[in-house]
Length: 370
Ligand SMILES: *Cc1c(COP(=O)(O)O)cnc(C)c1O
View: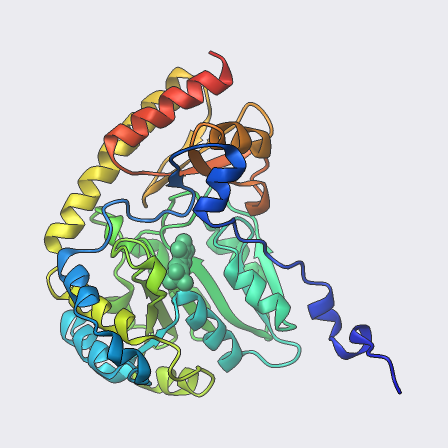
């Protein structure tokens, strides 16, 4: 009988890949750190939760429906998206979080020897999916905390299939203006697919911020990612989508798992976009207020910080980020350590309601002993 040799069965690019360890469930963490409450400021979740219409849709789900498969291609949700954004339903592909559509796009366009280009300090999933799938991820340094178009163009070659641009960037909050994005699209000149990840678009209130869904009429190689995890407060239901030309979506669809999006997520998402203006306005007010409080706090404490768009802010810790994380956890506050994002000893903090932001500032002051 042979003994199992995983080493020879698993491809080198998988063996080399370091698995990501998600944080423990809140009750486990609270026991570990001996706290009665935990403020989650680590994942850029919307502290206001989902819009009321989405809450009703979730509550309207009857348990009998759990036995029935969901719509395999999110039929009604795609109709709602088409209506909301002035597109065709065929221009949308919905996934189990936008993380799933990242995977589907890479599978659709990359073959052996191909590569993707993105930044070194951005949402890491583009890089991770490329690498555990056996494709090179070419990472270009940020410039003034922003994606550097020249560096990305210089990194591209004939085997580059996709350029990923996170706009605004997680974690730095920087963004490309419409002029900057168009200049990049013109320079790429249809040589590869350009994905613009607009996970935080709904938080941005800047006149020069580009709407990828409009620009894709001009640039057939443009793909836009959006998610219901952030502004729409549906992170637990795992739902996000891409929008592109019908031909492009028809290609990506081939590599996409059907039935990956559950019934409750589809219903909640459709309800969430139907009338979202009030929810977006309330969330933006909360985030703006939180940003003012944290900027003041970091300034008072003399900490360097980077604050731009999105519902988060980064600051440089005067000690190891993991040590600061543990000290904050003992006081019931969870932040994101950024060493893994290649920002050694920085933390990222989600912007939530005023009382929690004020508590964070007080606790930070206490643990830094100032
Ligand atoms: C949070 C986030 C997403 C969302 O991922 P989901 O899989 O939809 O939850 C996508 N892109 C960026 C940049 C993010 O920060």
